[in-house]
Each structure stands twice: as structure tokens, then as C-alpha cells.
Length: 226
Picture 1 (tube, rainbow, N blue to C red):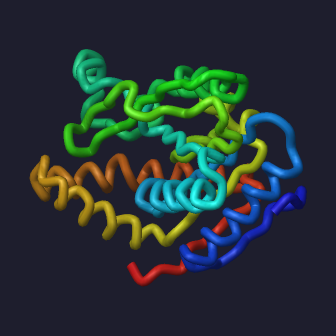
Picture 2 (picture 1 turned 135 degrees about the vertical axis):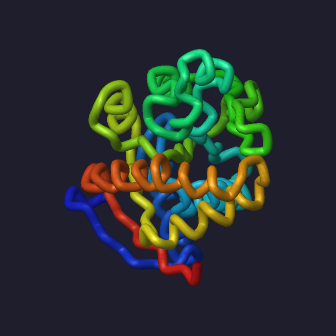
């Protein structure tokens, strides 16, 4: 996974997890300081689940080795989106605090103390501040999000902060089905609203993010049943 030319792999989630655990531990053994590994990909591809499992697996072997850093904690606050009139676009790049996310990641890369970070809650459709902690002893930052590899500002600040970048992909139709199920389970909006949002925002984001795939070091097509 350290080759200059991008590797393209087709793996089950379990196989992908095993490879990523080995890769992360090898980086920690080889490089000094804090190391950021980015898991990028479109909405609904399973990257957050994989990132959380990766952190759990790494910390099971070495406690406090890794921390999960989700981009979603840098959604604009719902009240700000309402003031801007962009609630309908929630999830698109312009509805995130991209510069603040880059600032946060820079701070984490250089921190010698515990730092709190925000999470996004789908239960309330808003950001929860100081929802997790990155302890001072953490070596590996597992950074996860849609827009880690975009080349336009402010997102282009992210890629140089990552020692390694992995792109996670599943087919577009799989994403559509997953997102319909996810929104229905949350029960916050009508089925009609969910379908409209997925087509107009989520799948447009999927297509946008797909164009950033060549900037990853390795690309993993996940083999799943659904």
C-alpha cells in the first residue's frame, strides 16, 4: 500500500479491515510522530463503519493507539444552514466547515495534549460539540469523510495532512438503496423528501467524490451482499 502507483483492490469488508490494520501498524512502526490515515469515499459506501472497526481493532491490540476522526462533525450547525437558506443542500461540500476541519486536523497532527472534537448526530440532524476525545498518547488518526481528497479550496488542505489515503467504493445503486433504508430508519422526514434528497444531493456527492478517487494511495471496491 506504500507504492507510488495506486493499488486497486476488490475485498470483502473483513479482508479490507485486515489489510488496513496491518497497514496502519506498519506506518506506526515506520514513521515518527502522529500519523493520519484517510478513509474517503461517497456517502453510504460503508467507510465510517470500516473506520470505527479499524480503530477498535488497533486499540484492542494496543490501547489508545488510534482515534476516529470523522469529517461529519464539521457539518455547519443547522441554525447556520437555516440562516443561509441552504438546509435543503445539507451534506454537499458547501454545507460543511471545511476550513475548520482542516484547522482541526492540523492541530491534531501537532498536539501534545488531549483534544475534544465534534460529532454529527443523525438522530437530531445536528452537530454535538466536544463529543469525543483524542488522547495525547494516540499515534494514529483514522480520518474519515466524503471530501478528504477534493482538490478545490478549502478541501485541498486535507490531502497533504494524510500520510496515507484509502478510497472506499461500492456501486451507485447499492448506495441509493442503503441511503433510502438509512433515512427511513431515522424517521425524521417523509419518504418523498428522502428520495428527493438522495437523488439531488447524496448521489450528486457520490459522483463528485468519485472524481477524487485517483488521489488515493489505494482504492478498495468493497464486495458486499447489500
